[in-house]
Image (cartoon, rainbow, N blue to C red; front, side, top):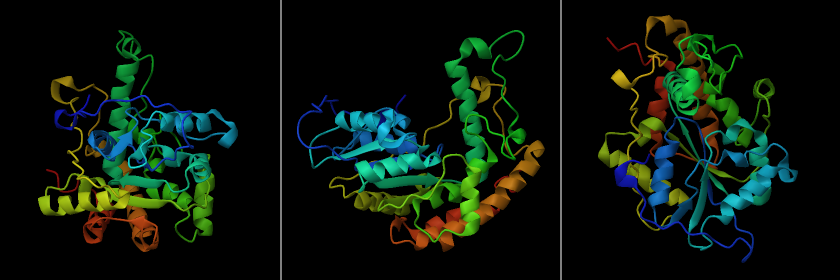
Length: 324
């Protein structure tokens, strides 16, 4: 459900796919899950200079390249968007970087696509993604989640989702943002990074000319009005938008208090101490790689570099340490 002040008044128009030359994709909200991607898609849907698919379209994640259904899906998605050359066409798929073939397909279909990628503190990322999957399970399978003899779709404890164990994409490994970002080929890839790519299925470095707008969720939720306005202006400039972009604040979690499912977790509890230690250790390495490697590429843009670096520097510290 959309947040009220971002409800779009734009009429949804069906376009004739057979008319005119093949349309290109202008931008892709490529990741990461639970990093403000929905907030951005609402803003672009409401904007007069952009047209974005209302639904998340991860069916464009390539598995078989140009011979697979994903290429046709991409053409269909773009075919449903505006044919007006003045309008920027976009798609949201927060899991785009989980398969290198998505990038390979875009280099052939829309090589000038601009990528928008959000990151956040690995501890909060894993907590939010895990809780999101729990809510999703109850939404999709209500009859199987509420039974007298226990869950027919058991939810593994969060602390077990490490060392390669994955549940619906939730694992400590997926909080290593640098592994996925290294596929973009914006840095000199080391032997260690190549080995890291081998650990994750469907990962590879894809040569491309994509421009990347990288942000942290802290920037999207920044309480400093002046700084946040500067962030929005940078994003407008990145996409070459002619009209102001109105970005609301991140979606609120309504499944709290009496509405909370019993499996939802608070990662600051002591039983997750070791898990947080692992994530903080990873986070320290991730933020160094972003600072010293990824951000050195001319293809990577960040708004307010100093503030961005400040937000990711916090990844080497436990966000629960100061909570009483």
